[in-house]
Length: 438
Ligand SMILES: NC(=O)c1ccc[n+]([C@@H]2O[C@H](COP(=O)([O-])OP(=O)(O)OC[C@H]3O[C@@H](n4cnc5c(N)ncnc54)[C@H](O)[C@@H]3O)[C@@H](O)[C@H]2O)c1
Image 1 (cartoon, helix red, strand yellow):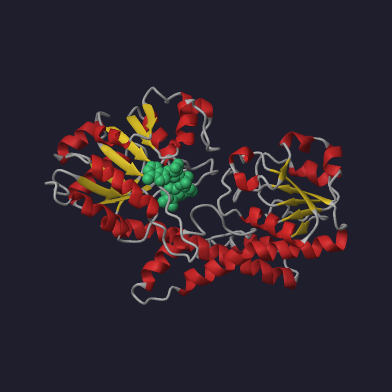
Image 2: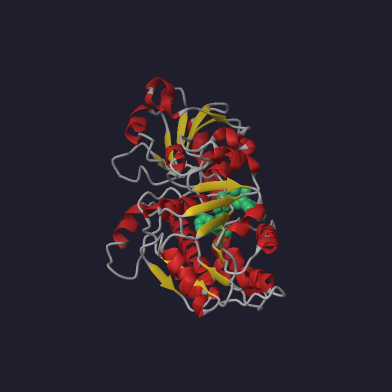
Protein backbone atom coordinates (compact mmCIF):
# COMPACT_ATOMS: atom_id res chain seq x y z
CA UNK A 1 0.00 0.00 0.00
CA UNK A 2 2.84 2.43 0.79
CA UNK A 3 4.05 2.25 -2.83
CA UNK A 4 0.62 3.33 -4.06
CA UNK A 5 0.61 6.23 -1.60
CA UNK A 6 4.07 7.35 -2.72
CA UNK A 7 2.91 7.26 -6.33
CA UNK A 8 -0.13 9.34 -5.41
CA UNK A 9 2.05 11.88 -3.62
CA UNK A 10 4.37 12.17 -6.62
CA UNK A 11 1.43 12.80 -8.92
CA UNK A 12 -0.06 15.28 -6.38
CA UNK A 13 -3.23 13.24 -6.07
CA UNK A 14 -3.19 13.02 -2.28
CA UNK A 15 -5.37 15.38 -0.28
CA UNK A 16 -3.64 16.97 2.69
CA UNK A 17 -5.38 17.85 5.96
CA UNK A 18 -3.71 20.24 8.38
CA UNK A 19 -5.05 20.35 11.96
CA UNK A 20 -4.36 23.72 13.63
CA UNK A 21 -3.96 26.78 11.40
CA UNK A 22 -1.63 28.99 13.43
CA UNK A 23 1.92 30.26 12.93
CA UNK A 24 2.93 26.79 11.76
CA UNK A 25 -0.16 25.15 10.28
CA UNK A 26 -1.14 28.04 8.02
CA UNK A 27 2.25 28.40 6.27
CA UNK A 28 2.51 24.59 5.90
CA UNK A 29 -0.94 24.45 4.31
CA UNK A 30 0.04 27.17 1.87
CA UNK A 31 3.38 25.52 1.11
CA UNK A 32 1.48 22.45 -0.13
CA UNK A 33 -1.10 24.60 -1.93
CA UNK A 34 1.75 26.35 -3.72
CA UNK A 35 2.85 22.95 -5.02
CA UNK A 36 -0.67 22.33 -6.35
CA UNK A 37 -1.92 19.95 -3.67
CA UNK A 38 -5.52 20.04 -2.44
CA UNK A 39 -5.39 21.09 1.22
CA UNK A 40 -8.10 21.13 3.88
CA UNK A 41 -7.28 23.15 7.00
CA UNK A 42 -9.02 22.28 10.28
CA UNK A 43 -9.26 24.60 13.26
CA UNK A 44 -11.49 24.98 16.32
CA UNK A 45 -11.26 28.76 16.25
CA UNK A 46 -14.24 29.91 14.17
CA UNK A 47 -13.07 33.55 14.16
CA UNK A 48 -9.84 32.50 12.46
CA UNK A 49 -11.72 30.33 9.97
CA UNK A 50 -14.05 33.19 9.07
CA UNK A 51 -11.09 35.47 8.42
CA UNK A 52 -9.41 32.85 6.24
CA UNK A 53 -12.61 32.31 4.25
CA UNK A 54 -12.51 36.03 3.42
CA UNK A 55 -8.79 35.76 2.54
CA UNK A 56 -7.83 37.78 5.58
CA UNK A 57 -4.61 36.62 7.17
CA UNK A 58 -4.01 36.87 10.92
CA UNK A 59 -0.32 36.06 10.57
CA UNK A 60 2.10 38.82 9.61
CA UNK A 61 4.25 36.70 7.31
CA UNK A 62 1.25 35.69 5.16
CA UNK A 63 -0.29 38.46 3.09
CA UNK A 64 -3.98 38.60 2.18
CA UNK A 65 -3.09 38.59 -1.50
CA UNK A 66 -1.03 35.45 -1.15
CA UNK A 67 -3.84 33.72 0.77
CA UNK A 68 -6.35 34.79 -1.88
CA UNK A 69 -4.48 32.81 -4.53
CA UNK A 70 -5.47 29.56 -2.83
CA UNK A 71 -8.50 30.03 -0.61
CA UNK A 72 -11.55 28.22 -2.01
CA UNK A 73 -9.42 27.09 -4.96
CA UNK A 74 -7.17 24.37 -3.58
CA UNK A 75 -7.31 25.48 0.08
CA UNK A 76 -10.51 24.91 2.05
CA UNK A 77 -10.88 25.55 5.76
CA UNK A 78 -13.38 24.09 8.20
CA UNK A 79 -14.22 23.24 11.79
CA UNK A 80 -16.06 20.10 10.65
CA UNK A 81 -13.64 17.39 11.66
CA UNK A 82 -15.69 14.65 9.95
CA UNK A 83 -14.02 15.93 6.77
CA UNK A 84 -10.80 14.37 8.05
CA UNK A 85 -12.19 11.18 6.51
CA UNK A 86 -11.67 12.71 3.08
CA UNK A 87 -7.96 13.44 3.39
CA UNK A 88 -5.01 11.10 2.85
CA UNK A 89 -2.34 12.82 4.92
CA UNK A 90 -3.12 14.43 8.29
CA UNK A 91 -0.56 16.89 9.68
CA UNK A 92 -1.05 17.97 13.30
CA UNK A 93 0.09 21.52 14.14
CA UNK A 94 -1.65 22.37 17.42
CA UNK A 95 -0.05 24.29 20.32
CA UNK A 96 2.12 22.56 22.90
CA UNK A 97 2.46 25.15 25.69
CA UNK A 98 3.52 24.65 29.29
CA UNK A 99 1.52 24.95 32.49
CA UNK A 100 2.33 27.49 35.21
CA UNK A 101 4.58 24.95 36.91
CA UNK A 102 6.55 24.47 33.63
CA UNK A 103 5.15 21.03 32.85
CA UNK A 104 3.83 20.09 29.37
CA UNK A 105 0.24 21.08 28.61
CA UNK A 106 -0.84 18.34 26.22
CA UNK A 107 -4.54 19.25 26.11
CA UNK A 108 -4.43 20.56 22.53
CA UNK A 109 -2.77 17.40 21.24
CA UNK A 110 -5.27 15.29 23.19
CA UNK A 111 -8.23 17.12 21.67
CA UNK A 112 -6.80 16.87 18.15
CA UNK A 113 -6.21 13.15 18.64
CA UNK A 114 -9.85 12.63 19.72
CA UNK A 115 -11.09 14.16 16.45
CA UNK A 116 -8.63 12.18 14.36
CA UNK A 117 -9.59 8.93 16.10
CA UNK A 118 -13.26 9.40 15.17
CA UNK A 119 -12.41 9.84 11.51
CA UNK A 120 -9.48 7.55 10.88
CA UNK A 121 -9.54 5.30 7.83
CA UNK A 122 -7.29 2.73 6.18
CA UNK A 123 -4.56 4.20 3.98
CA UNK A 124 -4.11 7.45 5.89
CA UNK A 125 -0.79 8.84 7.07
CA UNK A 126 -0.79 10.72 10.37
CA UNK A 127 2.08 13.13 10.98
CA UNK A 128 2.77 15.37 13.95
CA UNK A 129 4.76 18.59 13.68
CA UNK A 130 4.16 19.57 17.29
CA UNK A 131 7.19 20.27 19.42
CA UNK A 132 7.05 17.80 22.27
CA UNK A 133 9.10 15.47 24.49
CA UNK A 134 10.69 12.31 23.05
CA UNK A 135 8.16 9.50 23.04
CA UNK A 136 5.04 11.67 23.16
CA UNK A 137 3.93 11.27 19.53
CA UNK A 138 3.96 7.48 19.69
CA UNK A 139 2.47 7.47 23.19
CA UNK A 140 -0.56 9.47 21.98
CA UNK A 141 -0.95 8.21 18.44
CA UNK A 142 -0.26 4.47 18.55
CA UNK A 143 -3.33 3.80 20.73
CA UNK A 144 -5.43 5.30 17.92
CA UNK A 145 -4.65 2.38 15.71
CA UNK A 146 -5.64 -0.37 18.13
CA UNK A 147 -8.75 -2.54 17.67
CA UNK A 148 -9.70 -1.34 14.19
CA UNK A 149 -7.67 -3.75 12.09
CA UNK A 150 -5.03 -1.08 11.52
CA UNK A 151 -1.43 -2.23 11.10
CA UNK A 152 1.07 0.61 11.29
CA UNK A 153 3.38 0.57 8.32
CA UNK A 154 1.03 -1.73 6.36
CA UNK A 155 -2.36 -0.05 6.04
CA UNK A 156 -1.93 3.05 8.20
CA UNK A 157 1.19 5.19 8.54
CA UNK A 158 2.68 7.30 11.30
CA UNK A 159 5.45 9.89 11.26
CA UNK A 160 6.90 12.98 12.83
CA UNK A 161 8.68 16.01 11.44
CA UNK A 162 9.65 18.87 13.74
CA UNK A 163 8.79 22.33 12.49
CA UNK A 164 11.60 24.82 12.01
CA UNK A 165 9.71 27.81 10.68
CA UNK A 166 11.22 31.02 12.05
CA UNK A 167 8.46 33.66 11.75
CA UNK A 168 9.95 36.99 10.68
CA UNK A 169 12.98 35.39 9.03
CA UNK A 170 12.81 36.52 5.41
CA UNK A 171 15.68 34.38 4.10
CA UNK A 172 14.58 30.95 5.29
CA UNK A 173 10.89 30.18 5.04
CA UNK A 174 8.80 27.11 4.49
CA UNK A 175 7.26 28.88 1.48
CA UNK A 176 10.70 29.19 -0.14
CA UNK A 177 11.23 25.47 0.52
CA UNK A 178 14.73 26.19 1.82
CA UNK A 179 14.47 24.95 5.41
CA UNK A 180 15.89 21.40 5.64
CA UNK A 181 13.33 19.03 7.17
CA UNK A 182 14.17 16.36 9.71
CA UNK A 183 11.73 13.47 9.32
CA UNK A 184 11.11 10.05 10.76
CA UNK A 185 8.46 7.36 10.82
CA UNK A 186 7.28 4.43 12.90
CA UNK A 187 8.51 1.87 10.32
CA UNK A 188 10.59 1.86 7.14
CA UNK A 189 7.45 2.25 5.00
CA UNK A 190 6.30 5.17 7.13
CA UNK A 191 9.72 6.80 6.69
CA UNK A 192 9.51 6.40 2.90
CA UNK A 193 6.12 8.12 2.86
CA UNK A 194 7.31 10.94 5.14
CA UNK A 195 10.33 11.51 2.94
CA UNK A 196 8.10 11.80 -0.11
CA UNK A 197 5.59 14.11 1.58
CA UNK A 198 8.21 16.57 2.76
CA UNK A 199 10.35 16.52 -0.35
CA UNK A 200 7.36 18.29 -1.96
CA UNK A 201 7.94 21.37 0.22
CA UNK A 202 11.60 21.16 1.20
CA UNK A 203 14.70 20.82 -0.92
CA UNK A 204 16.56 18.91 1.77
CA UNK A 205 15.25 16.01 3.85
CA UNK A 206 17.21 14.48 6.70
CA UNK A 207 15.90 11.12 7.82
CA UNK A 208 16.50 10.02 11.41
CA UNK A 209 16.30 6.54 12.86
CA UNK A 210 13.13 6.91 14.88
CA UNK A 211 10.43 9.36 15.91
CA UNK A 212 11.85 10.03 19.36
CA UNK A 213 15.18 11.12 17.83
CA UNK A 214 13.31 13.58 15.62
CA UNK A 215 11.36 14.88 18.65
CA UNK A 216 14.58 15.21 20.62
CA UNK A 217 16.37 17.00 17.75
CA UNK A 218 13.86 19.84 17.82
CA UNK A 219 14.17 20.25 21.59
CA UNK A 220 17.96 20.10 21.37
CA UNK A 221 18.00 22.90 18.75
CA UNK A 222 15.90 25.15 20.97
CA UNK A 223 17.74 24.27 24.17
CA UNK A 224 20.98 25.16 22.39
CA UNK A 225 19.47 28.57 21.64
CA UNK A 226 18.10 29.03 25.14
CA UNK A 227 21.42 28.20 26.81
CA UNK A 228 23.41 30.44 24.47
CA UNK A 229 20.99 33.34 24.81
CA UNK A 230 21.16 32.96 28.61
CA UNK A 231 24.96 32.95 28.37
CA UNK A 232 25.20 36.02 26.15
CA UNK A 233 22.78 37.96 28.37
CA UNK A 234 24.93 37.09 31.37
CA UNK A 235 28.01 38.24 29.43
CA UNK A 236 26.23 41.50 28.64
CA UNK A 237 25.57 42.16 32.35
CA UNK A 238 29.24 41.49 33.15
CA UNK A 239 30.41 43.69 30.26
CA UNK A 240 28.17 46.57 31.41
CA UNK A 241 29.81 46.56 34.84
CA UNK A 242 33.31 46.31 33.32
CA UNK A 243 32.57 49.07 30.80
CA UNK A 244 33.14 46.76 27.83
CA UNK A 245 30.98 46.92 24.70
CA UNK A 246 29.62 43.37 24.47
CA UNK A 247 28.90 43.69 20.74
CA UNK A 248 32.54 44.63 20.10
CA UNK A 249 33.56 41.52 22.01
CA UNK A 250 31.14 39.29 20.08
CA UNK A 251 32.30 40.72 16.75
CA UNK A 252 35.89 40.02 17.74
CA UNK A 253 35.13 36.48 18.95
CA UNK A 254 33.27 35.57 15.78
CA UNK A 255 36.35 36.18 13.65
CA UNK A 256 37.48 32.77 14.95
CA UNK A 257 36.64 30.45 12.07
CA UNK A 258 35.77 27.49 14.31
CA UNK A 259 34.30 26.79 17.74
CA UNK A 260 32.31 30.01 18.22
CA UNK A 261 28.76 30.80 17.07
CA UNK A 262 27.59 34.33 17.81
CA UNK A 263 24.45 34.99 19.82
CA UNK A 264 23.34 38.50 20.71
CA UNK A 265 21.99 39.95 23.95
CA UNK A 266 18.46 41.27 24.13
CA UNK A 267 15.54 41.93 26.45
CA UNK A 268 14.80 38.20 26.89
CA UNK A 269 13.26 35.26 25.06
CA UNK A 270 9.66 35.04 23.86
CA UNK A 271 7.30 33.34 21.44
CA UNK A 272 5.98 29.80 21.57
CA UNK A 273 9.37 28.07 21.44
CA UNK A 274 12.41 29.12 23.49
CA UNK A 275 10.58 29.94 26.76
CA UNK A 276 8.57 26.72 26.46
CA UNK A 277 10.23 23.83 24.62
CA UNK A 278 13.26 23.26 26.90
CA UNK A 279 10.91 22.41 29.76
CA UNK A 280 9.46 19.52 27.75
CA UNK A 281 12.84 17.83 27.95
CA UNK A 282 13.60 18.75 31.57
CA UNK A 283 10.17 17.38 32.55
CA UNK A 284 10.88 14.13 30.68
CA UNK A 285 14.38 13.87 32.17
CA UNK A 286 12.92 14.40 35.66
CA UNK A 287 10.96 11.19 35.18
CA UNK A 288 14.30 9.38 34.95
CA UNK A 289 15.69 11.28 37.95
CA UNK A 290 18.01 13.18 35.64
CA UNK A 291 18.60 16.82 36.59
CA UNK A 292 18.94 19.00 33.50
CA UNK A 293 20.89 21.81 35.12
CA UNK A 294 21.74 23.76 31.95
CA UNK A 295 18.11 23.86 30.84
CA UNK A 296 16.89 25.10 34.20
CA UNK A 297 19.66 27.65 34.70
CA UNK A 298 19.22 29.11 31.20
CA UNK A 299 15.47 29.21 31.83
CA UNK A 300 15.98 31.14 35.06
CA UNK A 301 18.36 33.65 33.47
CA UNK A 302 16.08 34.15 30.47
CA UNK A 303 12.90 34.40 32.56
CA UNK A 304 14.54 37.01 34.74
CA UNK A 305 15.91 39.08 31.88
CA UNK A 306 12.87 41.34 31.17
CA UNK A 307 12.74 42.39 34.84
CA UNK A 308 16.48 43.04 34.86
CA UNK A 309 16.18 45.18 31.71
CA UNK A 310 13.14 47.03 33.13
CA UNK A 311 15.05 47.84 36.33
CA UNK A 312 18.06 49.07 34.33
CA UNK A 313 15.74 51.28 32.31
CA UNK A 314 14.15 52.72 35.44
CA UNK A 315 17.56 53.48 36.99
CA UNK A 316 18.65 55.32 33.84
CA UNK A 317 15.33 57.09 33.29
CA UNK A 318 15.14 58.37 36.87
CA UNK A 319 18.38 60.26 36.34
CA UNK A 320 17.15 61.97 33.20
CA UNK A 321 13.39 62.53 33.06
CA UNK A 322 10.47 63.55 35.26
CA UNK A 323 7.92 61.37 36.96
CA UNK A 324 5.00 61.57 34.53
CA UNK A 325 6.89 62.14 31.31
CA UNK A 326 5.91 60.49 28.06
CA UNK A 327 8.01 57.61 26.73
CA UNK A 328 7.77 56.10 23.29
CA UNK A 329 8.31 52.34 23.12
CA UNK A 330 9.37 50.94 19.75
CA UNK A 331 8.45 47.30 19.17
CA UNK A 332 6.32 45.07 21.35
CA UNK A 333 6.58 41.71 19.53
CA UNK A 334 8.99 39.17 20.92
CA UNK A 335 11.41 39.38 18.03
CA UNK A 336 12.57 41.21 14.93
CA UNK A 337 10.12 41.53 12.04
CA UNK A 338 7.56 39.33 13.79
CA UNK A 339 3.98 40.15 14.83
CA UNK A 340 3.95 37.53 17.59
CA UNK A 341 3.48 38.82 21.14
CA UNK A 342 3.31 35.46 22.91
CA UNK A 343 5.56 35.59 26.02
CA UNK A 344 6.96 38.84 24.66
CA UNK A 345 9.75 40.35 26.83
CA UNK A 346 8.93 43.94 25.70
CA UNK A 347 5.38 43.41 26.93
CA UNK A 348 6.68 42.19 30.29
CA UNK A 349 9.01 45.19 30.49
CA UNK A 350 6.14 47.60 29.78
CA UNK A 351 4.00 45.95 32.47
CA UNK A 352 6.88 46.30 34.93
CA UNK A 353 7.39 49.97 34.01
CA UNK A 354 3.67 50.62 34.51
CA UNK A 355 3.76 48.92 37.90
CA UNK A 356 6.87 50.64 39.21
CA UNK A 357 6.69 54.13 37.63
CA UNK A 358 4.26 56.83 36.55
CA UNK A 359 5.74 57.33 33.07
CA UNK A 360 3.16 57.51 30.31
CA UNK A 361 4.03 54.80 27.79
CA UNK A 362 3.02 55.04 24.14
CA UNK A 363 3.83 52.03 21.96
CA UNK A 364 4.49 51.78 18.25
CA UNK A 365 4.77 48.38 16.59
CA UNK A 366 3.92 48.38 12.88
CA UNK A 367 3.56 44.59 12.72
CA UNK A 368 1.43 43.71 15.73
CA UNK A 369 -2.30 43.64 15.02
CA UNK A 370 -3.27 45.57 18.12
CA UNK A 371 -7.07 45.13 18.00
CA UNK A 372 -6.76 41.35 18.03
CA UNK A 373 -5.33 41.06 21.55
CA UNK A 374 -7.37 41.99 24.65
CA UNK A 375 -4.20 42.07 26.74
CA UNK A 376 -3.01 45.09 24.72
CA UNK A 377 -6.10 47.15 25.64
CA UNK A 378 -4.32 48.61 28.66
CA UNK A 379 -1.67 50.27 26.45
CA UNK A 380 -1.78 53.26 24.10
CA UNK A 381 -0.55 52.66 20.54
CA UNK A 382 0.47 55.03 17.76
CA UNK A 383 0.74 54.38 14.04
CA UNK A 384 4.21 54.16 12.49
CA UNK A 385 3.31 57.03 10.12
CA UNK A 386 3.83 59.39 13.09
CA UNK A 387 7.51 58.44 13.26
CA UNK A 388 8.15 60.35 10.04
CA UNK A 389 7.27 63.58 11.85
CA UNK A 390 10.14 65.01 13.89
CA UNK A 391 7.76 67.13 16.00
CA UNK A 392 5.94 63.98 17.05
CA UNK A 393 9.24 62.34 18.09
CA UNK A 394 10.34 65.42 20.01
CA UNK A 395 7.19 65.23 22.19
CA UNK A 396 8.68 62.28 24.05
CA UNK A 397 11.16 62.67 26.89
CA UNK A 398 12.67 59.32 25.96
CA UNK A 399 12.43 56.66 23.27
CA UNK A 400 13.17 53.02 24.05
CA UNK A 401 13.84 50.52 21.25
CA UNK A 402 12.61 47.17 22.53
CA UNK A 403 12.24 45.19 19.30
CA UNK A 404 14.17 45.82 16.12
CA UNK A 405 11.92 45.99 13.04
CA UNK A 406 13.20 46.80 9.55
CA UNK A 407 10.37 49.36 9.25
CA UNK A 408 11.87 51.71 11.85
CA UNK A 409 14.07 54.51 10.54
CA UNK A 410 16.77 54.45 13.21
CA UNK A 411 18.85 57.31 11.82
CA UNK A 412 15.84 59.65 11.75
CA UNK A 413 14.94 58.65 15.30
CA UNK A 414 18.52 59.22 16.42
CA UNK A 415 18.60 62.69 14.94
CA UNK A 416 15.30 63.81 16.46
CA UNK A 417 15.01 62.11 19.85
CA UNK A 418 15.96 63.66 23.17
CA UNK A 419 16.98 60.50 25.00
CA UNK A 420 17.33 57.20 23.20
CA UNK A 421 17.66 53.84 24.92
CA UNK A 422 18.38 50.59 23.11
CA UNK A 423 17.46 47.15 24.49
CA UNK A 424 18.35 45.51 21.16
CA UNK A 425 21.60 46.12 19.34
CA UNK A 426 20.46 48.48 16.61
CA UNK A 427 22.65 51.31 17.89
CA UNK A 428 25.68 49.18 18.66
CA UNK A 429 27.86 51.25 16.31
CA UNK A 430 30.12 53.63 18.24
CA UNK A 431 28.99 56.61 16.16
CA UNK A 432 25.62 56.61 17.98
CA UNK A 433 27.18 58.30 20.99
CA UNK A 434 24.12 59.56 22.85
CA UNK A 435 22.34 56.16 22.95
CA UNK A 436 22.02 54.44 26.34
CA UNK A 437 22.45 50.69 25.84
CA UNK A 438 20.40 48.72 28.33
N1 LIG B 1 5.45 29.44 16.35
C1 LIG B 1 6.65 28.98 16.06
O1 LIG B 1 7.56 29.76 15.76
C2 LIG B 1 6.95 27.49 16.08
C3 LIG B 1 8.16 27.05 15.53
C4 LIG B 1 8.44 25.70 15.52
C5 LIG B 1 7.53 24.80 16.07
N2 LIG B 1 6.35 25.23 16.62
C6 LIG B 1 5.43 24.24 17.15
O2 LIG B 1 4.31 24.10 16.27
C7 LIG B 1 3.13 23.78 17.01
C8 LIG B 1 2.04 24.78 16.70
O3 LIG B 1 2.44 26.06 17.15
P1 LIG B 1 1.88 27.42 16.56
O4 LIG B 1 2.87 28.48 16.91
O5 LIG B 1 1.46 27.25 15.15
O6 LIG B 1 0.55 27.61 17.46
P2 LIG B 1 -0.62 28.67 17.21
O7 LIG B 1 -1.18 28.95 18.55
O8 LIG B 1 -0.12 29.80 16.37
O9 LIG B 1 -1.68 27.89 16.33
C9 LIG B 1 -2.32 26.74 16.73
C10 LIG B 1 -3.68 26.65 16.07
O10 LIG B 1 -4.26 25.39 16.47
C11 LIG B 1 -5.65 25.59 16.73
N3 LIG B 1 -6.10 24.49 17.57
C12 LIG B 1 -5.94 24.28 18.88
N4 LIG B 1 -6.46 23.10 19.24
C13 LIG B 1 -6.95 22.55 18.12
C14 LIG B 1 -7.63 21.31 17.84
N5 LIG B 1 -7.85 20.42 18.78
N6 LIG B 1 -8.01 21.08 16.58
C15 LIG B 1 -7.78 21.98 15.59
N7 LIG B 1 -7.15 23.15 15.80
C16 LIG B 1 -6.75 23.42 17.05
C17 LIG B 1 -5.70 26.97 17.36
O11 LIG B 1 -6.99 27.52 17.25
C18 LIG B 1 -4.67 27.73 16.52
O12 LIG B 1 -5.25 28.34 15.39
C19 LIG B 1 3.56 23.77 18.48
O13 LIG B 1 3.86 22.46 18.87
C20 LIG B 1 4.81 24.62 18.49
O14 LIG B 1 5.68 24.29 19.54
C21 LIG B 1 6.04 26.56 16.62
